[in-house]
Amino acid sequence: MIIAMGNDHAAVEMKNDIKAYVESKGYEVIDFGTSTGESCDYPVYGEKVGRAVASGKADYGIAICGTGIGIGIAAGKVKGVRVCTCSEPFSARMSRRHNNTNVLTFGARVIGVEMARMIVDEWLDNQYEGGRHQRRVALLGEIENR
Ligand code: RB5
Image (tube, rainbow, N blue to C red):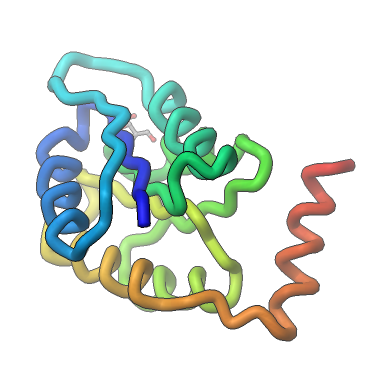
């Protein structure tokens, strides 16, 4: 399993921690940066993560900025990407089970690293349930085609 990761300058430390954590869980990580605290533009990194997932280069993506919002909006612009931006584990779990989200984002200025790890655990350890949810997830894809 390959996870694409990306972040802006607000989330370098958080990205480094979560990257090591995800690797310790047995995942391979493609790190699209940024790796320095120099000010940069979150849409660039959100798009990189989104494209890696949409193209199949990565199975899932995790993207982090100050709030998780901007980088989530950016990743979600890529066709085929379903983003979960969240600050607690319940939404992360349900977004995998019901919405088949394939990119997770959160904010380094919003939550601490222990909460981030908990969110990552719930998101990675839960599977899409399909069934009644599939029609709705398919409808999301249809929006992209209109
Ligand atoms: C950068 O200052 C900040 O705007 C960015 O990290 C993020 O929070 C945007 O959504």
